[in-house]
Image 1 (tube, rainbow, N blue to C red):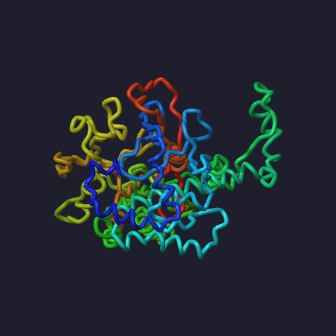
Image 2 (image 1 turned 90 degrees about the vertical axis):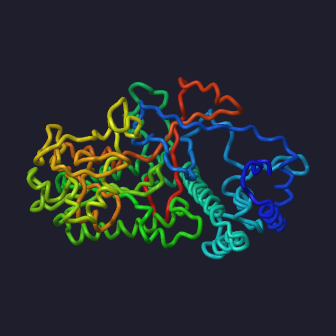
Image 3 (image 1 turned 45 degrees about the vertical axis):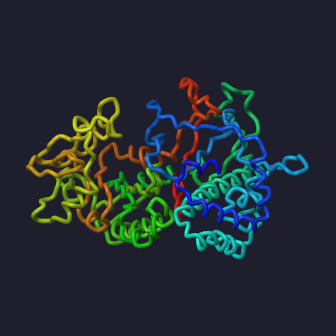
Amino acid sequence: MAIFDNADVCENTIKLLMDVMKKNPYDELLRRMHDFPSIEDVTLQICKNAGVDQRNYNNPTADQVAVIWIEGNNSNIPYDRNIMLHGSDGKKHIIKHYFGCYDPLQYPLLFPSGENGWHQNIPKFKDARIVLESQHTIVNQTDFSSVESILQSEQRVDMYIKLETTRLDYCRNNQAELRSEYYQGIVDNINCGKTRGHEIGKRIVLPASFIEGPRDMRKRYLDVMALVRRFGKPDLFITMTCNPEWKEIKENLIRSQQPQDRPDLTARVFRSKFQDLKKEVIHKAAFGKVSAYAYVVEFQKRGLPHIHMLIILKQEYKINSADQFDDYVSAELPQKENNSRLFNLVVKHMMHRPCGYLNKTNSCMINGQCKSHYPRNFCERTVQGEDGYPIYRRRNDGQTADVRRAKLTNQWVVPYNPYLLMRYDCHINVKVCSGLTAVNYLYKYIYKGHDKVAVHIASGNEVDTIDEIKKFPRCKMVIRTGSFVANF
């Protein structure tokens, strides 16, 4: 109750919640919590270290539910994720994440009747229906739309971690079934036989069937490299990001909800848009007939899903000269008099935010320079740059756009395709990548790996004297996801 002292919370609402909880078989246990000494406060600080790859270790910028999943055993973590119950007999009972009573103890407001949550032997349909009905009990009685969104988002992320942890436990405890002997012996000798002979022995493996594991990512990367060897270098690189203002999202939000409160909705709408994009590019050949393609779906730490997609065109449709680039990509403001809708979409979605001499504190600034190299130089015609990347046409035609109290020219336009931008009304970056540096897109975007953070965990007021020389543990950053598989 002390948490709500400085919050604008109605006392009657709290009483109503307490009355609802009286039907919970764990009610007495939860109410006795105040009789135990308070648990030591733990502070977690995310470290922004310029020495690590910012494509993986960039800090979150959105206010959302997320989980820090520590990679491996780490002595800096003061507690396990298990729940500790203190019985009336003085004994302590550990509740593991795969116990049915874990969810009603962790999220009592979502399980007001104390029914079991997820466990390993849960039936596929019956219990799932009961859980869904129970989760809406409080909402129907008190109209707690925003509270429900936060709690269900937290449970959704926690559920993902529980399932991943269970899958990892299965891999660890069933090495014989995974035929781990095929991964040792010769591999051991190659890796450490010459320099660390004492380390040769039994290996605990993570199979390629474990999604996002090192073998799975390596297999996917080699598959794409095989496509490049068979069909040639990629020709186009497309990045598409979800627009939270799509009408399909806005029309399905309830009162007081924001798009970030409904990751399931944003992900579902984004998937439908992406399916349409694949139909346009792959089946309708918007850029020419396609030989092969690869893509990855990500949920960035700014809160929205987006995709990176590489397109390999058939030989007769290959982009072989810089003169062809303008047929696919534009990096200029359109004439407002001729196409006001396209002009407004470019200003809304495809303008780099003012940085450099206009805003030295922008997030893209590193050591006084924009990491994306904006503003770009004017250029009368598209040419192939010396570094292999194209230099798109950006004429000094006097066109300007007002963006965040600054007048920006063609130097600030992010390359786009007019047809796709008009069709999808979102940030959709299109680049020609047929040069020698095309392979960089495989490392830099497609298979750069999942999001990570570097964190410092301290207890009590230790955070006041953080020693930044200490090694920060490496962690996986898991953000609440939608209803389809994503590569973090």
